[in-house]
Each structure stands twice: as C-alpha cells, then as structure tokens.
Image (tube, rainbow, N blue to C red):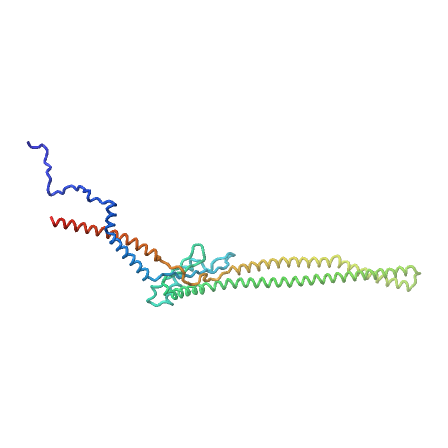
Length: 355
C-alpha cells in the first residue's frame, strides 16, 4: 500500500548533516599533552628568540639623552618681574631658527638627518629644555649643537637684559647722588646749629657785660645826683644818660636776639635737619629697593650646561630578553600545535592510503 506521505529519500547530492564526533573535541588536557609531547619544539623556539634578543642587545649600542636647560632672563616691567621675552616666543625661535642654524653650521649634508634636537618648556615655568637622543659616539656633536643653541639665545636676549640693568644702574647712581647731597646739607645745617649755639653764648656774655656796664653807669649817675648840681656835673649827667640809653638799646637788641631771632633760627635748623633725616631714610629705602631689583635681575643662562644624561634611554636589556622569552613561548606553542597537526594529518593520509 502506497504511503500517503511523500518520500523523503536521501538525495546523494546533498551533504549529510554534521554530527560532531567526541574524538574531535579538544580539551585543555589535550593541549597540555601536546605541549609536553612537543616540548623540544617549544624549547627550540624559545631558545631561538632569546638568542635573537641577546644578539640585538649586544649589537645595538646604548642610547643616551643629551640635554641642556636654559633659564630665560627676567627683568622688571611695570613694577613686576617678567621674562625678557615670552617663553612661547623664545621656544618658537629655538625650534624654527636656532636649531636649524646650529645644524647647518656644525653638520655636513650626510649627517643632517642623524642628529635631531627638540625643545620644550615645562608648563608655568621660564625654563626651556633642548634635548636630543644618540649614541656615545655622537656625544661631541650633540654637545656642540646644544652649546650653539645656548649661545644664540644669549646673544639674542642679552641686549635687552643689558638695557634693563643700565636703567637700574642709572637709578642707583641718581639715588646715591641724592643721598650724598642730603648728607652734605645735613652737615651744613649741623654746622649752622653749632655756630648758632656759639653765637648764643656770645650774646649772653655780651648781655651780661651790658648789664654790668649799665649797673656801673647808673651807680655813677646816682652818685652825681647826690652832690650839688654844677655845670660840670650837668655835663657828666648828660653823657651818662646818653651812655645808659645806648646800653639799654644794646641790651634790648641782645634780649630780642635771645628771645626771638635765635630760637627762630634754631627751630628752622632743627626742622631742616628733621626733614633731611626723613629724606635720607626715604632715599635709603629706595636704594634698598634698587638693590633688591638689581639682585632679582637674571640674565639668560644655561642652568644645566649641555651634557649627556647618565641614565641610558630606550628599552633595557632585561626587558628585551623578557619580551623575547615571552615571544619565544608563544611561537613555540604555535609551532608545537602546528607540528602536532602535521603529524596527525600525515597519519590520517597514511591510513587512508593503506585502505
């Protein structure tokens, strides 16, 4: 009896569905067994890579960094200490002008590409670091290039530093001259004060003499008045009265000097001495400020002279050998798996041939 359902007979042209065979599954244990079986392949790859790394370490000369650190000079501008020229401007000059000029002057055409310098500035500082990388055999050339760059910077910025220093020197000389003038004026006023004291003593002595003479003349006049008046007596009284009036006028003049003129002169001299001292103190403070500004002025200089830094640069020998060791293990593992694959493929082909 024919089936009511269509036939599902297999068409030979269509591949059978793949059913995984548990024998084809790969586990970590299988991988480990393969690595143990092919340990000499792994060891050979490891040894080859380590030898290649060792040869690279021995053949490649150590690299060093050649460096100089330049401090841009500082001057006073608008009362504040500022760089002679902005750091960015100097940095651009170094990169675009000074380094190419140094390379052109010191290098031949075939060496222009071998010696390279770079410039940078730590953020927020007035320092510029110029550096290059090379072998010990290139030391003299690198040091010459760095020294040439330093000299170019100093030659460029030196005139502006000298101008600022000259301004400070002129200010210092002016202040010193004013101080010397004030000292001379103080000496003159002190001399006037001493002469005034001497004059005061002289006036006091003269006043004492005048008072003594007045007392003598008044005694003589009183003695004449006690005697009978006579013509000679009248004449002498007139003379005595005239002398007494003259001495009284002299005494009044001397007393006025002691009471008004001399004190006024003394006050004026003391006032001038006091003001002179104030002015001297002001000038001395100004001189201290000038000295501080002069000390703060900094020329453009190399705070780190061109030199080779002690520590070599680049990847160290230990790191290179470690990396080549890791690479050797990885390549050895791949080589072991590939060798195992080839061995199994050959075995399958041989078995197929025998059938």
